[in-house]
Image 1 (tube, helix red, strand yellow):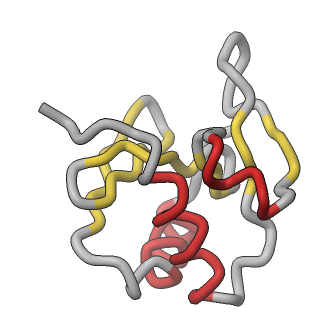
Image 2 (cartoon, rainbow, N blue to C red):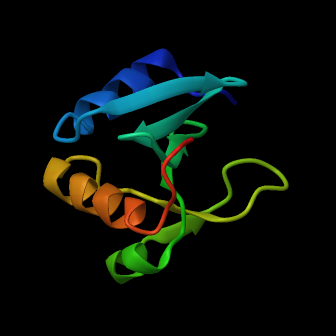
Length: 99
């Protein structure tokens, strides 16, 4: 099941405390970048972020974005923009910037 454009737009709205956010389509889903750092994506109408040391303290549930992929963390509380911002910033601390 591919992510709907409506859900993508909703997630981008929830990420509006972070700039710049880039959203790239990828086979019916969306990759998310913050300031050139790939931190996660939108998969099957779910917001997922990469698992890294700095975001473990948020105790997020694990989810598989697609068959054969590594587990990621799913952000379930989508109404709290500040929490989402904090999780994304914590995630990006451990990830390399896109070349």
